[in-house]
Image 1 (cartoon, rainbow, N blue to C red):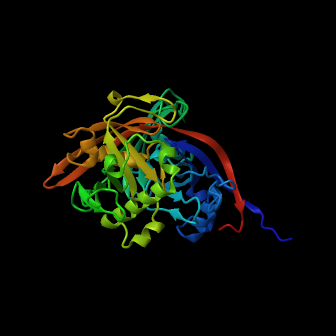
Image 2 (image 1 turned 60 degrees about the vertical axis):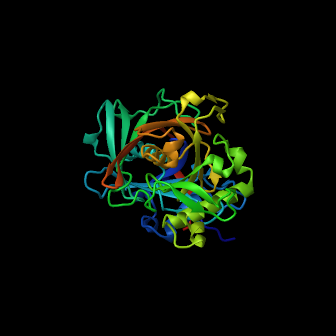
Image 3 (image 1 turned 30 degrees about the vertical axis):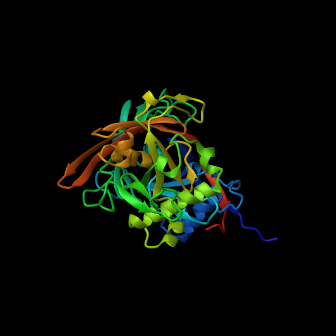
Length: 396
């Protein structure tokens, strides 16, 4: 009986924020996987365990959710004044598809730590004790991100008392700054409006349209009003993910929003771009009970936000979507800003299914355009396992 031996590929399994992913140093990959293309995609699919018609990713490192079906490839940066180039691949669960169209803000918190571990940051930039500023080039979206990684006795400090809703155990805090998440030469609002009326077939609103803010900060995101689509705004995962009809409704919204934002040229193309845009819905602050059983009171938050990722309601909040939330909240008149009470603000605390998160953004209006200098939030990261992953040698 013929068989193909497995190959070993050095890898590290890391939690970053409320996500987990398999991290690789580019130079550790098989030669033909060190360049973008079919071989690399096939390798990552096999590592994660996709496509899996059972939806479990049992034969791979994936965890059968959008938050745990992720891969990262790092390399020494080719950009001036940057330490590391960061490439993110979102792996579909039930299809043979790796989406390279966006970033993962949660795993960004782990990029700095892994870059130090992997020797991708110059030793003279790492203090014996204090904070190492890791300058990250996000290669998917061509943006700069700064991670402030705590260092103790010359090594990355991973443990601490920083608590992040959606993560069970406390860890060391890693502040992350998304520098100029929208380039001044780019349109933050692709339609030119802070609010649009989005036409969606089978729309449940009386007018046949939905009020939407469509923004490209952090990650392209469509923000809807919860009450217009029949929700309270404090729903948990099972309230939506258990209904194929509701998920199909959100996917229809996502496709039509992507078309209006100019991200795709036809509705059919939305099937090949699952990672972006995101769809989220907002509501004014209301009391609710988080998935952990924690009581969130109206006074704890400025607004509620629920977001979908890869076709399912996210268990917490995607880091890149949090950047979009902070940015939209800072701009008067957006659905996010109005849900938070309107007016000018440089930070918001929002409720999500697992608890709360605070995100800040510095935005200003130049002539008739909005510019965001940076968005800031704190996450945490921890290495869970390091060594090698094994996949059949004919996988790629």
